[in-house]
Image (cartoon, rainbow, N blue to C red; front, side):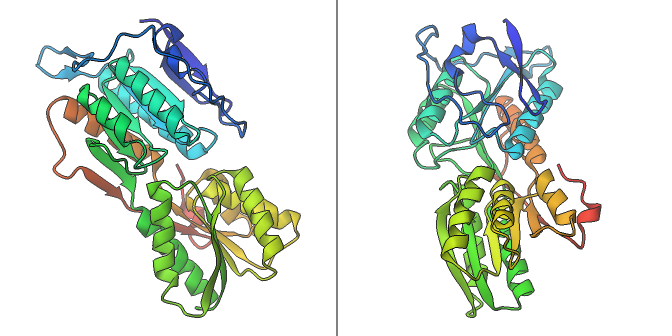
Length: 350
């Protein structure tokens, strides 16, 4: 099979199938920039319909050899997903060897685009599909179709309906809880908080729910806003926080559902010359760690995730299933750790 390499702007290199095999994901690959991805999708007329077979071979000891893995994520302009892609490729090649085909695609949180990607991965007889769902419920029909065709699907970072084989995610409720407990403690139980929300995916919903559950125990803490979707991006955080700063003259703390939107929120604060609040995010992104370590930054804490570990585990579990070994519990939660100015000097990051 012809292979080529795609190098993203971040310097990350992923090995992907040549266009003759998966030209169908043209417009789905995006670099680590804030440019909007091309949402055009191509047809798969050059690919034979999927059958309930797997493009795998048996090794001498009877194990099934891993030959291909595909990952579709929400947004490859987010370093979190870039690291996840790196880890998927590395783990796939560790298990199956250097000739394993690895496809990394961005859905841009577009359900139709992601459904098209999964359909094409299925048609190409991909062994393991690692799915970061753009829409937990909306993705169900295409997941069901892929499962009927014999594909192994591992949901990662957020849940997905339709009968996925396993779900590997951060304990996102815990991430929201520890973040907002830090906020409540630092405010001493009194103040105005805004939540910079994000795409309505399972992980984000759980983070916000965990935050609200904690803050509800403090009657003197008021949530001024919680429904503004910053899209999980720096640009979105800048846009949403700019509006919130105009609307609310007194804000004491910000909870951002991820670090890119939190960094954008700090940029908005700097532009508005506002220093009257602090920001807590989720991810443990390198730029957030740097900000927390800075004496002048408004960034106070982040509940760090482990995208590398999640991605590695997804490939490992998928390969186990490929060889007839299903996990005893299909839902695997990875705990978070809160990084603050007190412990940031010992944090290694992703």
